[in-house]
Image 1 (cartoon, one colour):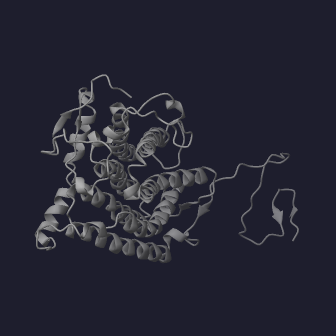
Image 2 (cartoon, rainbow, N blue to C red; image 1 turned 60 degrees about the vertical axis):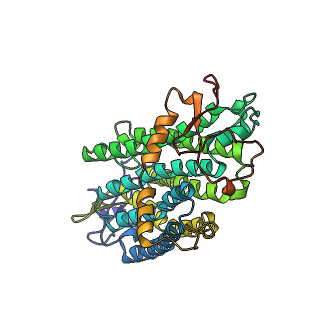
Length: 408
């Protein structure tokens, strides 16, 4: 239907009350696309009961799968040095899933998701540290690892990012770098989470806002550098010990831990870019007002709810409890009583070992000694060198092994 303009520039031929969009006369330039707005009459998918039901189904199924696996590890808690780290890693599914689901339920409360995600952000750094520590336990501790790789030349590989290390050899400084790069993420991530909450309270933080006056830009840059350094350290450690870790099927373990943590980060970045391009709408009405940054975070939480189901299934195969079932806790083959299971869970969630490890690795005297794990040698990988001169009287036993100038 054609529309004719009268002398007063009012359109003729449109029904009464129809919206009119007019651009400047005489201008051929196209207008900049604005962020689409959704009204309550057009609710987006995240506001529907269908989204909450679908996400809830995947979340509670993932919780049942993972909680049963954690219980079985605690029931057959025969290798505490290893299973302590495994249980901590498995807890990432309940924390990620339930946190994301709560954020989705309180989607219309624009600021709530920031506080929920703070808990998730703090725990993911803890998981990365525990995964590296688990690999240390598999191999018998720092002394056993250095006995295998010390002095060997670092193979140059662009895939693993070791092309810049050509001509260097593995040393205690190499292990120190891997641990320090992982531990720094355990500090930076919770710190950035707290700063995000503070900035949110003062109105200086909004997801997807790359304005230089917004805290989102700087928090994202710092977090990106920190998480990349941590990922690089894990790659380096795996590259150095991949042959020693073969008996423990490390590929699936590495893939799952990295994908759960780092995939969620890059998903958030992609959604932030889509939001910046105007592809994600904001919700504005008299009753509900939700910015496009919160909508993007809502989609992120919905995706995580579904992903955690598949993560729970994959982690069940990657960190199976069946390898510990034959290692009974007593000579009669009895399983752990419930009291023992609860005490094992309490011991598992105690972060004291991470604090001690941080003090150990950031100590100036680190180069003069390494910690020797008390891992049961019968369950460890076959090592080519003798370690009869290493004491195993306690977890905190220090053994003089390397000179102070052995740097990476």
